[in-house]
Image (cartoon, rainbow, N blue to C red; front, side, top):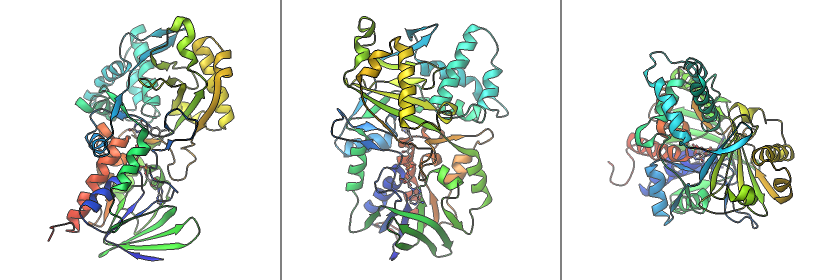
Length: 443
Ligand SMILES: Cc1cc2nc3c(=O)[nH]c(=O)nc-3n(C[C@H](O)[C@H](O)[C@H](O)COP(=O)(O)OP(=O)(O)OC[C@H]3O[C@@H](n4cnc5c(N)ncnc54)[C@H](O)[C@@H]3O)c2cc1C
């Protein structure tokens, strides 16, 4: 099948759909190629009958001010809920309510890396913080969040980049957190629905293999799930594939990408995450210990296989999310779903000092293996030591025909997130329109 269009977009995740929306609004013909049979990429909402609310197997929260995410919510006539609930940490054999926001503590620790003249790994930075019981507690907590929240290996992650991310002003990690009511699935369907079908085609189950660029544009070779070859000729391409896919050679570029891009890719790593959704008959934890955890949002036990569990407060549901990121997720790599559930139930038994309730109350579990998923190859990106500037280098256009978007290309404060992906898609689409002098009213 031969297709001709102005701009070909690779990937229909948040970045690809946001780019397509800008092209559609500009009245520019575009073809979006998506390997999966669904839109959304690493945003993956399960809305099965029997689930009390839509459940996110991938991205779930909106972090900070996220202007593009909130603008889309408004356009979709939807709202976001503030993430609420008390946080408990397991120490010395029991759960204790946290007296200080854990995000504030980690931001305070990481702030000290802002002044580093030479970049070092997060682990080296944390080790050099000094001694004493308070420093040791801060170090443990910072390690937990670098692994859990950033999905990063502290031995490989850039201390400087983490300092920037955790202290990025209003958008820093101490800012508030929300969930889109009804899940990201609804938001993405709205985004998809805004595309003008006369101009923008989204072709699902169509995997791109080769991207050839020449002076006048690009040719993309792809194959449908049914084995039909598809060739798309366009003036420009917007590549939104995850860096894990690009680094693994999931798309062959002819000629190869310039050395600065290869260098950027070498410094942007993708962290693993295991997120397990546990559906219980009732929210049993709300009844335990004289209803002490009735308003619990988060449970932390840094040494556990799943160091973090959270509830969906302010929505009261019988669901708990079990989360492991970075090296903790890598350690679970060979666990199938049954083994993951058994591990999570053991961790809950330790947290609550009660092995029976979690086991007896369990109804269902949901998980997606992002590490083995060939179209994701991990959860989200972080910068390796010495990687300052790599995201900007990856985002830069090549020869005014190749444009790059996706969470890994967004500025540090929003990198790794759905908000960053959406923002980057809009940015890349505008760059492509400008370079090709396309769009309504353009000369
Ligand atoms: C478990 C988990 C939890 C997360 N939690 C949060 C959170 O709470 N908040 C938050 O903001 N972010 C979170 N994230 C990150 C967030 O989901 C991502 O940053 C964001 O969705 C990335 O969007 P993207 O468009 O850059 O990439 P993707 O969504 O990965 O889109 C890229 C698209 O390209 C497609 N593709 C790949 N290869 C090919 C090919 N060869 N041909 C054609 N198409 C191809 C993929 O199928 C995919 O649809 C989480 C991610 C995971 C995995």
